[in-house]
Amino acid sequence: MAGVTSQPGTAANKLNEPFGLAFDYSNSLYIADLFNNRVQKYQTGALFATTVAGQANESGCASSVCLSTPADITVDTDGNIYVADTYNKRVQFWSSGSLSGITIAGNST
Image (tube, rainbow, N blue to C red):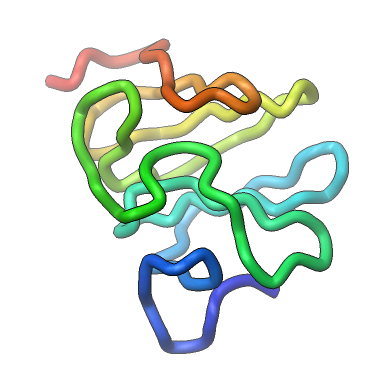
């Protein structure tokens, strides 16, 4: 359904340690791509994902545009994403379509 079997990578059709999963109201699949430091969205029937939180190139950092080992996610009815950003010790809120997140819990320490 998502990713390429036994082939980790950063391409839009690959994952590296997929961890948390969530579905939105239209049954799009969201995956916390742990070691690629991003959240990928697979729309129903799509072979490639779109990065909806974090950086598509696997870069991890503590700024508002990055994630560092996102472990779990949830999506609300408006398509907003809440991400457990493990190594940054925070929960990030990414409004639907946003290019950056807002820390709503934790303080990176």
